[in-house]
Image (cartoon, rainbow, N blue to C red; front, side, top):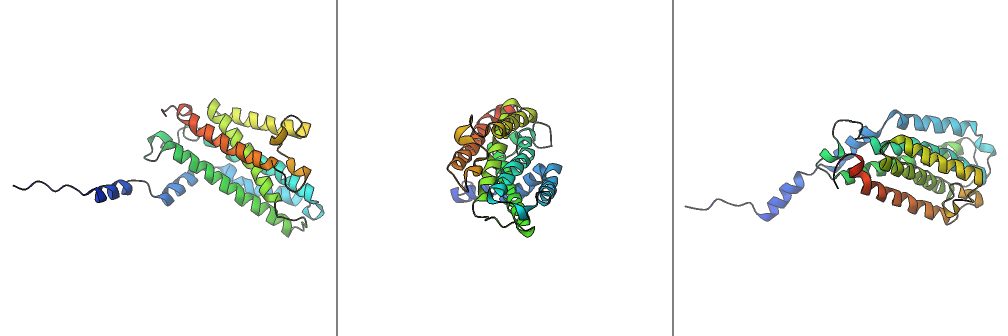
Length: 229
């Protein structure tokens, strides 16, 4: 009597990998979940604000300030809602997915960050079509970093306090504080630092803050949505 054949480790590994969600369907599924009406309204709002700003008469400093002011506000429409997307009951929760809940959350953050890149490029491209003559070398990059930092900060606070309102209030308080004090209290984390010139190291501090906020959000996420780490 022969012993039953055992699957080879190679095929067992293949079968294990085949049970993982395919990358593209996973991306598409989560993109559909996070693409709220605010995502659809964002390009329309930015296009209207770009048109009303009369880009043809903007200096480089004014062009930089426009991006830091308005793109960062748009980021507040995109990032904090990610904190409560599953907690509000959209069907599958993060903790019920075969994929790691932290991996799915990071994917959603990445999709929002990439969408901000698209919005930034489209906004400054439209301004160039409307007659803007200031250089578009580092200004859009700096404006995107400001938006990413403020949005990620709002997302982190929303995760910790389990609600969008906390994230919105904290992020807008930072925005208003910097607007009124010109960065005297926030130092290297001044949101509108492009007013000091075309580029400065403060943007790297903001970029680091964005990744720190993401890391803290991932750490606190299981407790925020009622699961275990």
